[in-house]
Length: 424
Image (cartoon, rainbow, N blue to C red; front, side, top):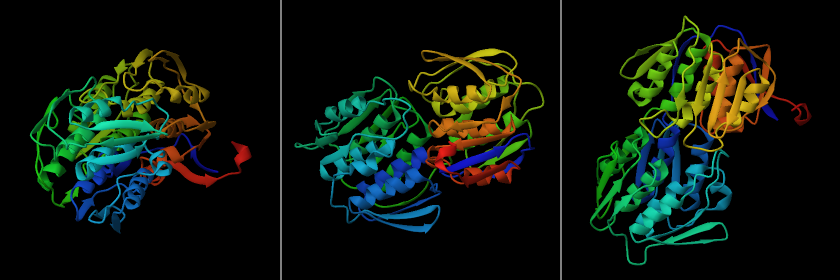
């Protein structure tokens, strides 16, 4: 069994660069289905979720050439299938991202129900309801979603009950070839939505309003392959800024837009963390105790659910008590029980976590509960007394490239190791 081991208490400071955003790269890869030919994506993170999406595309007939570890050439001219296999789709929540592109290209799709982290049900009802408004008919049989548009796709106005990122992306991609104009009301506003819209427009689509609550898509007849650079990963950046906030020493993160972490940085400043911003970099450090600050997760531009776990670690060491409210996923507090094993004082009441700050944490054996929770536990290990051993680290590999190596470059005493299963 592969684990991560950290010896806490060592000085951690310096500079790191983040990769392209996982949550953007996966959707951009799916979008290549709609433009037969070779699209080049640069700044692609070398992570396991990207590898899985690559296998999904290859399975339906795409050819992928890895130019270097961060550049992919995806040739979708040979895509001749609209069915994605369960054994791949079950590994990744973003699997439903191919639904819209397959409907656009073939007028039909068979997609297995999504898998990935166990952080919440993440119903695809909004995807289905929105696509039905465009003329798509659905059946769910044997765990597969069978979608078809027997009369073609037609533009419509779709109002989402919740500003879902996945539903917004699927509707954007499905409506690119729809007859007339499609309006998505209460659309998600995340930077990754804007990145997808930018690439679609480069391909020849007519998407306007991305980044606002109302997106309009005027249907076109075809798209062309392009070269596109993936936007920097704001969540990876936020994770490393939390390192500086946690240890106190300055950590500089390059390769992303600090505007994409607007509310996170404001909340961190309220917590007593010093923040310096540049156009494509940010620095965090601290020379005073952490101040307890209430947090509630909301869709962008609110506080991102993907930064909640890292922030919980900070608040676990604050001087006082506060409340974290999780409004996006119902199971996103699985981190709390593992953090409590390290000495934190956290109690869960529904979708609220009541955090009472403690003086310090102790190293022990813990399991990564999910992607962001696993990264957050590693951060806790940096400031814990003694050695902490983390198992189930495959969760971390889904979204962080070279996480251990980057932390080591900052001075952390950290390593990957293999231990017998019975030591877990």
